Length: 328
Image (cartoon, rainbow, N blue to C red; front, side):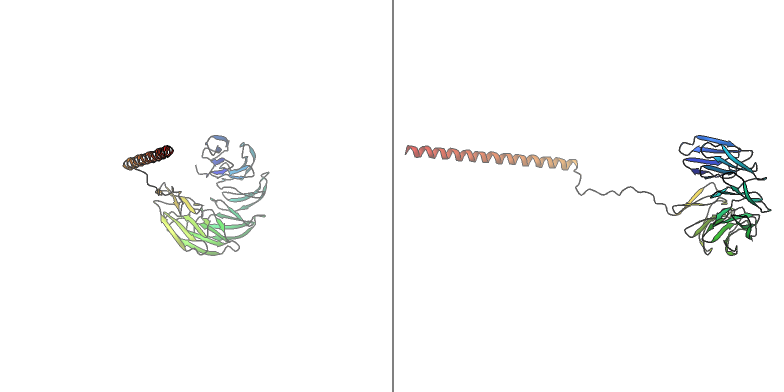
């Protein structure tokens, strides 16, 4: 399975090599529905306004009801659709091997298409009215409204990395072992960073850093503005997957069959033990305390008895004096 899962409203959507698109309950994993296409589904579904948009190797782009899986529309591109659709407003943008398409999200009608003229293995990024896409060894910027080319930039190798756009820069990896940062307006190179092997990993930009993997087995973090290396980590094999960042932690997989997490994770700790200021009595101390209580009680009783004897003695003495005085 090459399709990545998408989650929305408690439902997990993904494509499969068995030609189907699936929707599962995110809590239980039970199947809610499946939709059969005529080819493998490598495309990752995009969900927008209750509709699932996904491509298939049967040359079609599909719009499916997100709740029932019923087909709303399909559009034939005439070639494989490996890419994942991007939905902006009422337009669906999708790459189909050698062409870029803009389709009406409601009807599936074609708004425009751009013939790239070479294979397209990645997905486009849309930002500020511009579609950034790649074909063969070049990065293209197209008008999102008309599809006309604004600029292109050639790298030294085939590009299978999907572009990322942030802070006026387009970031993309290339099979020439480099990651590039291009000016979004002019397409001119701002910087490039050389790794030790092919970069098919799609960059992820967060908090001023750009993260990606390379087939030289490293995960990299670069200063997004300058391209300076902040850190790198060597895994046990090639890193072809694309990173994801959540709450300051970078997650990425490696061909060494491991998933890595980089960053600071706060793990809740149990409250520290604070000893009581009043010591817990031991068996011996309890016996000592009990003996002290018994002795103190006995003293009180003896004291009370003595006081009563004294009072009785006084009363008897007073009566004896009174009887003597009467006789006299």
